[in-house]
Image (tube, rainbow, N blue to C red; front, side, top):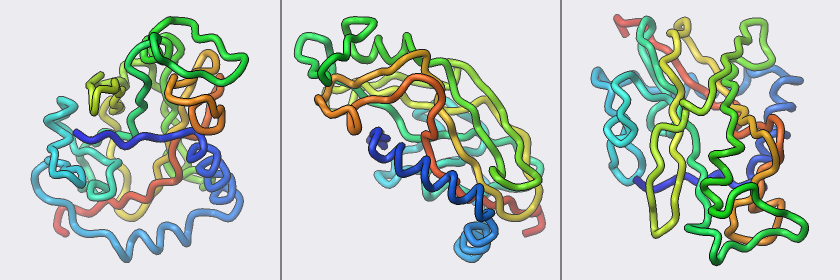
Length: 212
């Protein structure tokens, strides 16, 4: 499965989007998403742009919400939130880091795993219906190589159904300390800060009644 790599420069832009949506409300985003949404398929097979079955790849039987083609579900069914993978240099032997950064562990992926505390998933952020769910390292569903580089792939535990209509789901990542991927020396592109950071934007999702 081809990874969808979330770099720190994207994370910074995402944070600005999240804050703007919280201030202005998500009504416009929801209205646009509703016009574009399609009734979800009866089966739970989520396919990425390359045609890989994400359910099979991650070992998930529930409905997946996250990839662009997988953002609809039926009311009453549980769902799993997936979000972009995180990749690092293959080993510490040839890792390149920003000035002043020292990894906690020699291999960059081991360093990431040692600092990864989990995620906070927020539904309908900035609205009266906002709810937050916190999960630990169990959201790492698989470590797999792509083009010789290791990637961590994520999926939340099953989440309860949302009401009929359009919602948003936002993922915040939590790290115990700064982590750099070993792929370059630019902090803005190759590092994640310690603490909590916005890892995705407000992803619009839609839930349909069963009779839809």
